Amino acid sequence: MITILCSGSRGDFQPYIALAQELKKLGKAVRITGMREFETFVKSYGIDFYPIQVDFKSLNVDENMLKEAQSADNPLKMLLTFNKMKKYGLSIANEFYAACEGSELVIYHPGCTIGYFAAERLGIPAILASPFPMHKTKEQTSVIQYGRVKSTPLRNIISYEMLQGMLWLASNNSVKYLWKKEFGGLPKNFGKPYERHKDKKHPAVISCSNFVFKRPKDWNENIHQYGYWFVKEPTVYVPSKELCDFLNSGEKPVYIGFGSVFHKDQKETLSKLIIDALAKANKRGIICGMGKLDNLPSNIIAIDSIPHSWLFNRVAAVCHHGGAGTTSAGFAAGVPSVIIPFANDQHAWAHRAYDLKVGSKPITIKKLTSDNLAEAIEYALQDKIIENAKKLAADIATENGARDCAKVIVESLRR
Image (cartoon, rainbow, N blue to C red; front, top):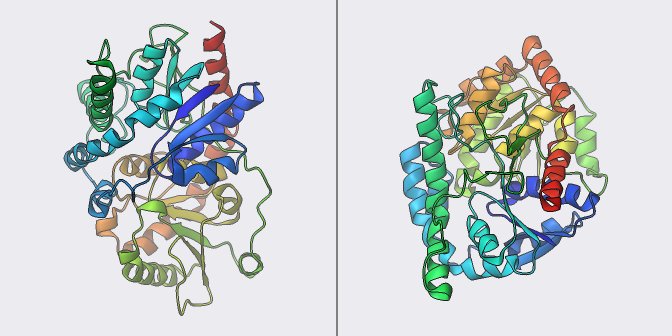
């Protein structure tokens, strides 16, 4: 049994589901471990799930702190938020450790470093699996600084120190707590485990296209990046008649949705802004994830959550918050991006889309107006941007990151 330790929102789980799907194809028994609220979602893909028997509600997680985490728009704010979040890891450390018991190999998200130390204690391999590039390199800036500072070899290394330091800050306390309580002291070699890939038995795997961020030449040879990890949907999605009729009733609409970073208290202001922007750009639109919206004009429809792999191929452009998963889905669909970053690594994906000439210039959520959103939509729908987006999608389609990383993992077990 291979156990994958995961954390985050629904979108954070998707690349790990894709990796699990490919491991199953290679004949491995695999399960994903995470908070119980994701059990139905993960199992819908035919992947076994080991539920951590808590959720944000039972942990009494401060909702204001979650909002801070989703709006931390600079590294200092991110650092302070990660420091606040670390106490919640103490409540689930023993369950994550228990999930590792009986496994032949542990794969862990960079926010679940307990997987590395649990595997070491249990005498089994551990593999770091990251949803974004996170290993030190002089060649490019990390996802928390990309587009914000000028790239130099020294600044780049420092930016990865910062990224790894924040991820470690969020998870090391749970390791300390459990080891002192259960084993009487800290694990040997206690410290950030992110650069410990000395041989082919202990590789790291990354979900990222080499056509988006090329694999750095100065990475250790045991760090593998072969493309995005895209989920294969278990069934063909059947849209509502209302959505089908809307899609067939005119030119392709612009998709606008902000995923889990959207809060209900933003609904009235943000929906009005979007409606005004679409009117100024003279475009049809699909607003996703804001619930029911009253008195919408006939050129706009509101929908709930929907598979990006189905919808993005049917729209003119995708406007979103810049989460890594949503960004990669937009790139793969071959449509232009309009990215409105709220926090964290979203700024990096927004800047990268612009630098690759497949999207408009980033507009932070704090500076968003109906005028600049309309301008961004018009910019993204230029012929040259549309052609660039199609070319990037064709390049991404030549990769199969989940399959090739799964092969690396199975090969590490053979060794």
